[in-house]
Image 1 (cartoon, helix red, strand yellow):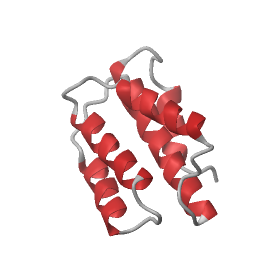
Image 2 (cartoon, rainbow, N blue to C red):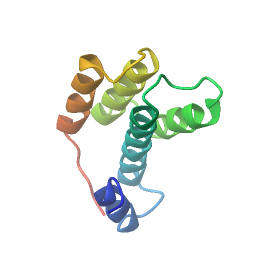
Image 3 (tube, rainbow, N blue to C red):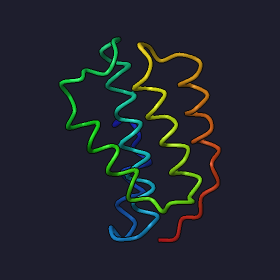
Image 4 (cartoon, helix red, strand yellow):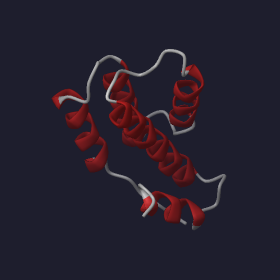
Length: 105
């Protein structure tokens, strides 16, 4: 099974230029960054600036007052400021998971 399969399925059913697609893609990007962090068991490698830039760019595609944008920004900040996936990172992931969204295909 592919990690986060539901995100891939959802992206495949949406118009790529829609606001909803951008929000789902940004969420997937953040989760994959957290996965990479968890898999290595160490802090984000500063040499991997391209992945961090890509994730930030995906988040910036979400509309400015969107709660998902704020939640994903918080997750990214917590992950990049810590040396482990700790309670603060998990809390920020829960906030993202509970963020109100409206998906229109």
